[in-house]
Length: 317
Length: 284
Image (cartoon, rainbow over all chains, first blue to last red):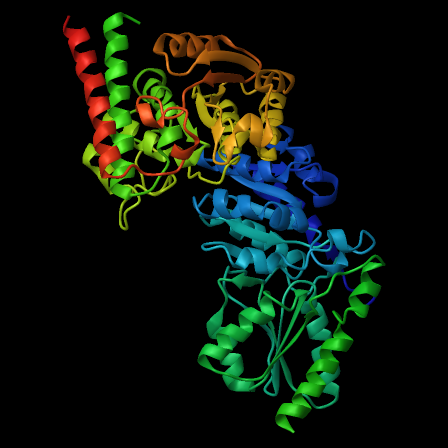
C-alpha cells in the first residue's frame, strides 16, 4: 500500500470548489472561522469576494446561506461536521430543509479520524441527524476522486445536500479517468457471491483490503460503495441481499442511525438477510493519532475481515 | 403623507386587524396579540414602503420581507391578502388542513412569503443573506425583517446582528416589535433584553426608535433608515400588544390564544366601529 496515493477528502472539497467557481459565478462559499481546516481557504485565495467568513457562528451561517440561495446564489456552507450537522441541526432542518433551499453543506472533520482533538470534535452522529431531515441528500465520498465528483454533482442538483468529508488522508481507490458518480447510485467495486460488504467514506478502501484478505481464505466477498446514504440505492442493496444472503456494513459513524441502519431497514422490509454492522458502537471517541484510533475502534480492514469471517461461519456454516 | 393617505393606511390596518381576528377565530388557534401590535408596520411595509408586485410575487428585483417572528403570520397573511397576493377569503382557512396558510409562514405555499420562518431567531439570519446577496448582485433591493422583543433573547439574533454590521448591510432594516410581552410574562421579568437600543447600537446598528402604532412615526423612521449608509438600521418600535381590541391590549394571555365566538363578536364590533369612524373622517 506504500505507493498508493492518499488525499484527505477535505482537500478535495476545497479543490472542487475552485474548479467549479470559474464557470459558475453563482457559487459562493461560507465558512465559520475554519477556512484553513475545511480547506475553503483555497477558494478564498482564488475568489476572495465570493468567500464569506461568518465567524464562529454556525447557526447564523446556515441562515445566511439560506438567504443567499433565495437571491440565486448556490452557497456551500462549511464547518466541521460536529457544528454543521450538530450545533446547527435545527437551523438546517427549519431554514434549509423545510424551505427547500438550494444550499450545500460541506462538513469536514467527520468521525473518529479527527484524531487528537478528541471526542468533542469527533462527530459520529451526523448521518443520523441529516438522514432524518425530509428532502435532504446525504453523501459521504470515499476518496479524492469521488469527493470532487460529489461536490460537482451536489452543485448541479437543486435542493439541500449534506456532504461529509474527512481530515485524514485516505487512499484513492477510484480511477479519475473512468469514474462516473451519480447521486443515489451505489458502486459495486468488487463482485462476490458469499457475502456483501457495504461501506462508505474511508471504510471503502478498508473494505476492499478486507475482501482481499478474505479471498485468500476462500471467502468471496462483494464490496459496494454506498456514497449516498440518502436517497439509498435500495435496488443495489436488495440485489446484494438476494444474491449473497449476508451483509456487513462499515462506516465511520455510530452504528445507530447511519449506513448500517439504513441498510437494515431496506433489507428488513423487502429481503430479510442477516446484517452485521461495523461502526462506532454507541460510544464517544477520544484523543490519539487517527490511524491508531481507527484500529482501536475496529474501523479497519482487519476488523471488517474478522466480523465478516465470523458472520459467514455463523450464517453459512 | 397627507391626512387622507394616513386615514387610508389606518383603514387598511384596521382591516388587517379584522383579518387577524377572523383568521384566528376560524382556526381556533394562532397568535393574535403580536399580529395586532405589528398590524400597522405590516400595512406600512406592504402598502407604502416596499417595492413589490402582487401579480408577480417572485419578481427578482422586489424588496424582501422576512417575518422572523413567524408566529404572527396571521397579521402578515392579512396584509398580503389585502394587498392582492391572494383572496381575502383565504384568511378564513388559516391553519386548516389543505390551506396554503400554515400556522407559520411557508415560502413555497403562500404567494408573497419570502422565507419560511417560525423557529425564533432564524429569520434575521436569512434576511442578512438576502441583503448580502442583493449587494453582491448590485441590486437596489432592500430587505426588511421583523423580530419580536422576546425573540431577541435567542443568541442567534446577535450572531446575525454582528454579521449585518460586519458586512455593512445598509440595505437591511431590522425591525423590533417592542410590545413588552412574551408567553411567560413581561419580557423585563422573564429575561430582560433591555436596553435594546444600546445593545443594537453596540452591535453596529443605526438605531431608530419610533411609535410602531403611529403612521407618521413609521413614515419618519423608515425614511431615516433609507438615509443610513455603511451600516444596517434597527427600527425599534414601541407598540401595544393586542392593539385595536380593547380586551386583548397589553394582555399576556392573548399571545397565542384564539377568540371564542363571543370574544370574536366583540372584537369585530370594536374594529368595525373604528373602521366606520375612519371612513367618516375620510369623507369629512
